Amino acid sequence: MRRYIKGRETILYIKYNDFWCPISCETSSPITEDVEMLDVTTRDNPNGWKTSMPTLQSYTIEFNGQTIYEGGENTLSYYRLRELKRTRTLVEWRRVTIDGGYLDHGKAYISNISDSNEVEGFQTFSATLVGYGEPTYSQDVIPGGNTDPGTDWIYGAGGFIDISQND
Image (cartoon, rainbow, N blue to C red; front, side, top):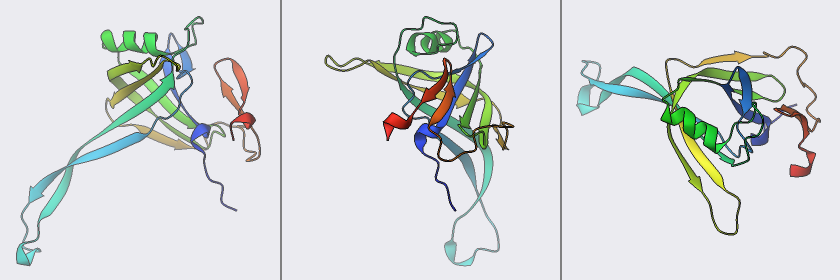
């Protein structure tokens, strides 16, 4: 039986003060990978078709969250992320599914960060990580991880969190 991975089951963490901190109230964290293409000529291409070869690769992670007060040392929200950007800190990141089945990780710089503070809403923020080198990928990385597809609990900075109310 196939099991689809819900967006809320994938969490982005950034290492801060030696703690792996989830992004506060993360709403999305897509990874985009790109490769530059070099135009080449070849005799295998009659009739004027263009040919290209891949060269340099890169990736970005654009993420969004809701701003919270950063009281504890393992809380990472807008203001601490903004400080990491301003100090040009190379950060370690990882994005893991709650069952430990898939893990992407690497290093990056925060290239931009912005906030939104609508009068009647909560303050939110968005930021972009620009990769530093090659990201790595692992599968089945958390031994004894949550492998029950029916579970509604994830492990966050404050312990286990019930996500069953968010369907």
